Figure 1: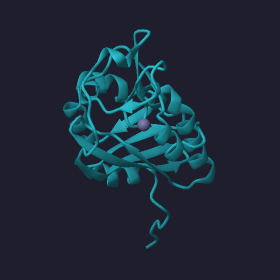
Figure 2: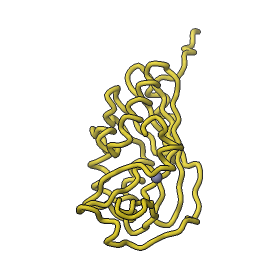
Figure 3: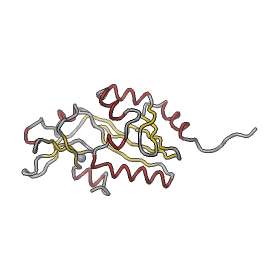
Amino acid sequence: MEESLGPPGLVETFTALAASDNVSYILSNDLFIQNTNSAWDQFAIENGGEQILATWGRGASLLAAIPEPLRPFFVDGFARACSTGERWEHDYECSSPERYRQFRMIVFPFAEGFVVTHALRAEHAHDRETRGPAEAYVHQGLITMCAHCRRVRTPPRARERWDWVPVYVARPLSHVSHGLCPPCAEYYYPDVA
Ligand SMILES: [Zn+2]
């Protein structure tokens, strides 16, 4: 009897990962979400339901859901994984108002697209200084939020500072523009800055 001993394909890899608690999905080569696992459904329910479904659901563009300053980084990362055939890992912060959370995104490239999974790396109560919402954060009608850590910037007229304001993290802001605070730019996205 001959057995297929080749490496697992896209569907096998997704099926294996889909059973875990990690949010996992299949992306087409042009980065549209094709399939999601039950951990993803759970995540959507816990994080704003319908809006998450519309932004990150099946058929949605992953790039459209990523804040603009980070798009080139993700385009490059997926392109590199595609051309080298090697998996790509990227650590990022996705904190709640109360808890610091760091995830690792792991991207497995295949000829037909990508399997992506997000593994929780660290979680603990925030030990950072917190501030309340204030008019001082609004500049020309917009609040500027770091696309990575979600701290918000004081307006340019003050000496620039990026503050952790849990109220602004608790729900989506309607008037927001995204930037990168200096530590995130240096540490996580040196090629973007
Ligand atoms: Zn930041």
